[in-house]
Image (cartoon, rainbow, N blue to C red; front, top):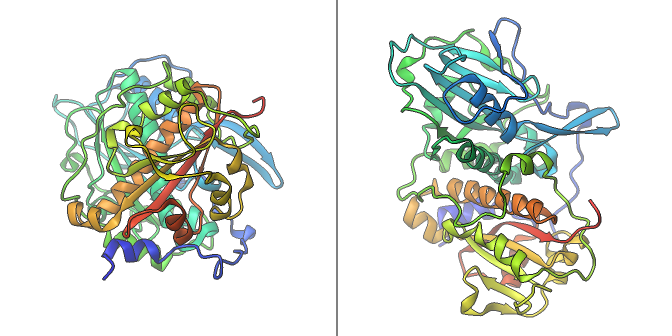
Amino acid sequence: MPSVLTQLHDAVNHDPVSLTGRRLDWANEPDPYKHYGPRVDRTSLPVDVQATGGLHAPGLARLLRGALGPTAVLRRPGGQLHLRAWASAGALYPFEAYVAASGVEGVPNGLHHYSPLENELRLLRPGKDSHGDAASLRLILATRIFRSSWKYGPRAFRYCLLDPGHALENLVLLARALGFSPRVSLSLDDAAWCRQLCLNQELERPVAAVDLGGAFSTNTLGDPAEPCLDRDGVVSPAEKPEPKIVHAFQVTAGAERESTPDTPPESVPWGDPESLMGSRRSRRNFLPDATLGQAAHEAITGCLRPWRDTPRVSLLCQGVEGMQDGRHALDVSTGPLVKGELHLPMTGVCLGQEWLANAPLHVLFTANLAELESRSGPSGYRGALLRAGRLGQRVYLAAEALGMGACGVGAFFDKQASDLLALEEHERLLYLVAVGPVRKR
């Protein structure tokens, strides 16, 4: 009998027989930014600040803008698309950030929405006077489901966790670089935080939090600034719940029974993550017949080691110096798990994305869902996808530091991927990131 998580995961599998093109409703394309009405108080954040970490507005502004803000403008028919510092499937950015502050210099006490476009905070709930208590600052990350389900349907549940995982890793890495001591929590009370944030939990779900100061207490919050904030922030006239995704969030709600400690990478190939976040792009113009040197390979794998088991990390190599072609565990001393040239068949598994064949390294993120459920409960599935996104973002930044390209893939024929990679019975591919030399950038 398949585990609950195996059934949940397999319910949105891609299959070459049943997969058909999805016609996009361009007239109702979701807005990549959330907007609130004029009655909500706003606080503009400083720009071009060089402040280090501290519980004050300049430090918060530098962190939010560097980790989450827009980095470039892509012109396209009908308008502009702002690219951002974190990777997102289809550049749809199904993610919102909120700031809970108490005693933070230059930031009104209360619960705010952060707008990366306007670089401002919108006050959703005013806070009470801190009366000299230790300052506290909590960032809450929520996924806005329709932005991704509009294009990807029920499978968007995976992207609604992978993409915030990318953004979460940016926040954690930059916070450490700026002198903060971030503490990450993936076990939130969905319903309670939806009430605090005035969210319709069928449309938007909190998935993670990062504490940067003292412990934040919701007892410091007052009533909502407006009684109908959930009616603001609609991202499309056609926005509606996706039943399979609503069900998946309900099944995976709650605290993980066994959580994974949040530890820094063992090694990183970058000195200044802020500049790399600003220049990072999804690059897939890989050079044909290119190879990956041993030093580059070790730099990439060195930043992946803290979460070796949740999710599992393995490497698909073809043209990597010192490595046989095939699939390897992250601990390469065990020898290849599957021998042979697998890149070309992997392009077929990944819906015919031929550019994948030119990337010498595919970093694979998998999970044995039966083991995960037994160890961590159903909520462990959210944690595995969020951590896969976090590690994927590290791969993006490592590639950027090395002058290479990286591009993530979440769309593939699931059973064919399991067969090609010789995964265990309940092990499933969650995500892959391809890495290698690219044409002149």
